[in-house]
Length: 577
Image (cartoon, rainbow, N blue to C red; front, side):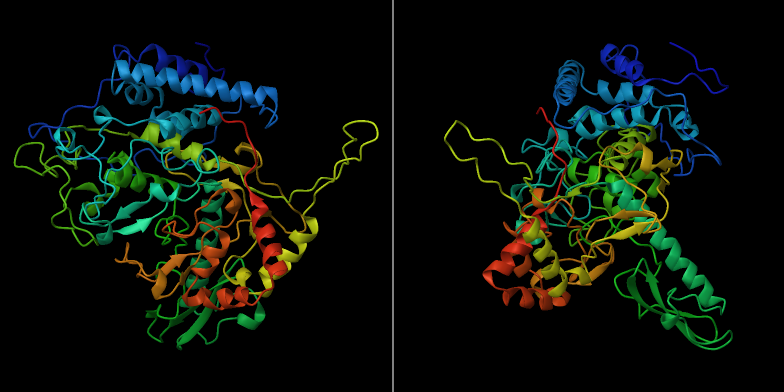
């Protein structure tokens, strides 16, 4: 293997890493398999900061350039075929030696080298795509407790308390509508926080489309820093509310004062400080008292791709990452563990038992399934990198601006179709009836740099798949057309969940991002809306006024609004299943 010319250790290229995966999948040359958990050899999970990127860590710069083929060209078709063949070969090798794929990845993706930036980002993300696509089995830690021996099988569409299912073996099995990393069909719903048996006991959740998560996290992080800066200024008596003079904080140091917190034009309510510096957060709207914008999950409960991914792997596949174990969430980690769900003390998917493998007996194997190190920090960070670099959706109407010639002499040329005028009128209706109040069309990202635990900072404007971020001097940053305010809203009793989730009350939901909505039906948090009309009709609470205004539109006005929303779509690409 070629050594790098600098002082860093030799980096493992994508071809070498993939060769390792393919050649060593017999298990002889790969890293040792996850050790079976025993009471005699307990292990303590390392804290989350063990492999944090060091100060000034950067990605290596001598990597070969990534040349993406034209999205619908012959080279794109060849690339899609190559990826499909790669997945198939890895599945065959995994069938021959279960568990070998993740063992090889643990050897290829050393967390310390990842944190230093010794590997090429594009190659790391490529391996992360394999982690996302992987079909997890019992050798990987699928399920929990004695689920592997349960004669009824390990799967439960209705989750058992906060511990989860599992109800699937892979991420693409639920994220597929509209293309890779897409949404889920109504039949892909999971029923969270249930009793393990009755759908009515759980909270129905439809898989969301995973569109440009890295951009979403970067936006939320900037808003969080902005809001917390305003809080610090208020506490120290310097005002620090919204940047508009009309919204400036009132009061002086030593006196009771308040500030309206606004970031990127989104109003998060009023924060008050008493004369003794006691904070009153009762006036905040759509955000927790910590002022952390959490853009992931239907309820807006998670702030990062990593936290979202770690929770999803546990809830839906029963696979526990080192990230989740380090966080120490008891309800998620232990069958029947404490949590917010209705079955928190009794939802045991496989039996906790009394033996050494009982749930919670080994800190390195909290779910008691006998598998330690199910997803280590290296493979997990690679999957996060893959998700962070996923492309932006498009906002493009169907416009045929070239008239094709007649099919034969003497025939008229075919009629052309264009929806540009409908899009323009639909955009006007979108604003007129109040949709844009919550589904804010565009937010400006000031910096494209994304901070991810365990990796050097990622420049999204350079590393993302196309379509990617682009700088706009007039906007003063990178316009992001996500159609959301990244804030929670009260959606009324008609949308109230059966249970609170991570402290978020039943009627509160994050404003879903409408980008890519043309390719992500069904709609709403529970997937009950087969069409845009049905989704609008499902708005209650703070969305009731827009619902009522939509009902007053004429047939033509509704059609134009639908066309506008249907222009929010994903970039077409060639896919080989």
